Image (tube, rainbow, N blue to C red):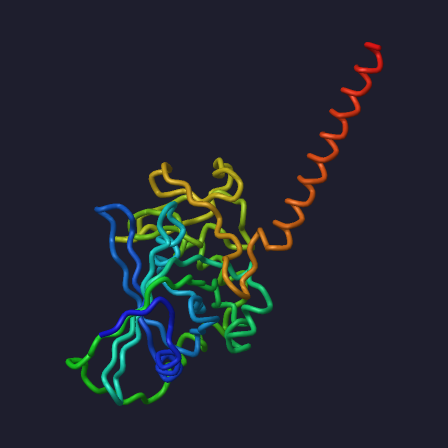
Length: 279
């Protein structure tokens, strides 16, 4: 195998040909669970050699989002595996950020199929800053022939309205299996309303709890009420806006410079005035 600091052109071509990839994340707690998820459809994009993103479609769990939202976490690994042609396993290691559906930018959305980003089942985009790329042989991976994508999920979403899916995500995606807060607590239709957990045979589901105290604005809360998670903001990375652009930083620096200059002029004038009075 080989290791790289960024995705080489040869591996970028390999990625384009793949019909499936796998996502792995983990809870920071030593008692927490590790999650691995398969992803299909045309939902992955390389933004540049050190940035990638994929569409996060609604499902019965939201483990990846919960892990990425954890304070001090964000660890994520993407794996591609050749099931035809020359053997190859490719892993992308990085730090991931969640961009909620309502926060996505036009530039980022344009990288994915239009029908998928307009689908009410689309809940977020995961943007990853890649810091390590590695390959391994894959000699023991069997051959499989690709037949076609399943259309069950798309057909299911086509019957739903946006509010229906927001309700579904509040119920199924508000907490991880470890009880950590996840993206279901930040659905646009119900944002700011308190959500309480309830047991669902091995899962923690959520429901709107009128009259109960909501967590601080912009935060989600864990099942035990002790862990807060910030509402996912706009992800960093090319084509994914952040709260602080280079232009904004430059503007702040310039404003501070003008303020300091004005203060210094004021101090200088005060000193001159005192000197004149003393004479």
